[in-house]
Length: 340
Image (cartoon, rainbow, N blue to C red; front, side, top):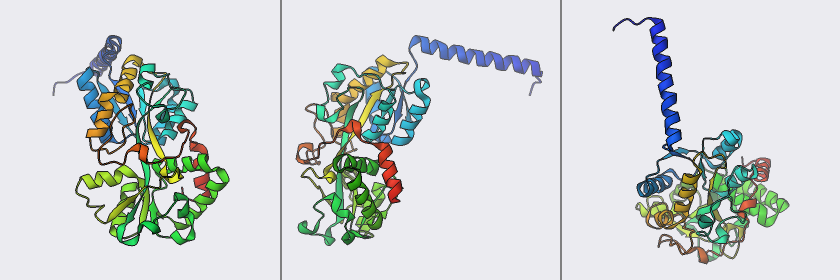
């Protein structure tokens, strides 16, 4: 290897760094920097969205994946210095956490018009992009129609001790608890959580809880619907012996959780970020929900969901203000009950 003096190496390093900075600056000036999405939605679904969006628009996208709460807290900590342009979640409490810190920009009216009012907050700073329903999956040989729980609240009864599973540490379950808190109040929610702590068999994830039901470890599990339909589409290895029960009747167990999307007020690419949300809530993004394998509900105006799903209108979901689902109080109550 040819000898280079330390001073020459230092000059070379400085020159290289200078060229790198100049290159980044040039990209920023030319608008060629990719759109940055902080993504807490399922990786494969967002990947499908991003690939289709880039194919249609030519706008390049970089995705940083993480959990609802983790990414929401990261955005709050980063504040105006966040490199994120867009935030996508599985559940709406994480959107509210960022919005309460006044970090979202208003969405374009044309974007908001593509989503019915029941699937987006009134303030217009973020919107629903997809939805999922709470369900009770159950081992079919263990239940008749009459012996299935009439309400999700029944699962706190001592008769259910050790019979059902859930994943309390996950954002999905915590969103369900947030809905119970809004619908039933703090005292009733605390009592329900105490009963759940006594009764529930804890698993690390919805799919694990569903598999345990299929394998006979528990009689049932409280999860979101798309885990069941996703497994069925792959041959039903973990659902062969499982049925799915919808609580309906505006029961807290019929809660429909809305996945959210918003543009950060600090975005350095606001036009591209707004374009992405408009595309996502429009025909292109919603069609992927219908034809893809995520089995989440499409929420766009006149958008169709996968034909195997029970229509949203038939779920008889309770009315919940998604912008007021309380992450902090939910965590406090779950910690007090010993579920976290």
